[in-house]
Length: 241
Length: 259
Image 1 (cartoon, each protein chain N blue to C red):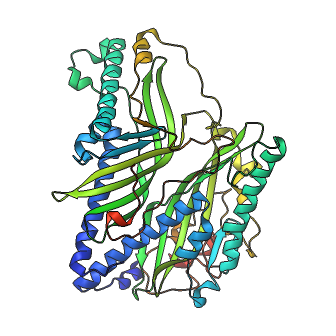
Image 2 (spheres, rainbow over the protein chains, first blue to last red):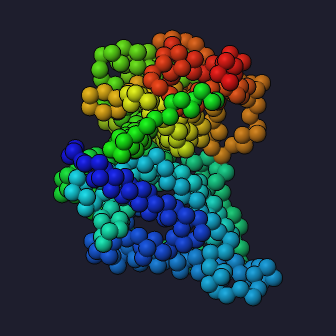
């Protein structure tokens, strides 16, 4: 690793805190149903950004933005249906005020390994993710517990750390209350929530199995690779494709 | 606790920056270890993240609730060899149950584990040579069976870690995993009477330590963590450290002198 002066180290300490702040903001955005804003708020404006989920990659700005916009559409639809079901409790509220009502997701990020390139232009980090998500389905709200990792390539743009590539992979993503290798419970459809059956998030534009969630005979599976000290982004690996 | 005030350090600006940087690098180091541990890449982790200098490797240690693995080869026996045996046994069960289907599969099939280091406490000694770290290890384990079932647990432990600065940086020297409890995924924990039945699924991972001794009694909840919690300290003290000769894990009534 390159030797840094105390002032350079101080700047790197600040950068590391900023990078953790970005991940902290994303985590809290999920908790307050603002996850649809993740692209606008935290991603680089570059065209080659990438988002990887268990079932594939959203490659390119349009695909990544499209995914997060769809999350917003899902939240809007869910909010509207919940509002219809609870008119007395929710009457008089605007659509904006009702956005995200009735749902909460916790995606705490911890156990981070962060490496900033010697040239200070990029950084990489990996975090454990351990929490739960809740979504409205045609059978009502369903919560999952999740265990996995967020692995991120950052790029410094105008003094701010922005996401170039984000891998958000779940080792476990299974209905709460059910052993994470047992079949999930099937709930009776709720007619008021029927429109949720027709809602689907866009498929990745590069579909592939990036990671299987755990099952009894899953092949050996590791977390995304841990960042190592590096000089420039060209000298290391990428979390994107 | 007034006596700990004397351990407050005076820093120059440069020393303060390097002290803060050291703490960041220690956090990176511990996080790397818990990730590698969950991935089953413990051989590589011990090689790169644990002590290498002979004066430290001889008494490097990893402790479970039931004892200490002492010396780096013994740490490897537990973290590497016993894990490999567990993975190979799991794979063998699948291969024997369905001949041919799992030929050539890498050991680790049908298993998963995650560890973490959340809510850390971290202090570096006044002499700048040692560090002590405490965190929660909130993770999971899963092991499949050929019949399609699996035993899956949410795991709750504490990690007490002592680090030493070697020529090429900070290294893990002593690590105590105090396992508190396991909750079987999908089961109601209230249905398990830990006091009476001694229920502790994690016991299958304790192995056969070099030095068998009670390091953590998770059945009765003795409030002894306070005494082992990292706090300002001058230098390494074998008695107060997290190694096999220290007091770590002793029950509160055996450590009242610290109050």
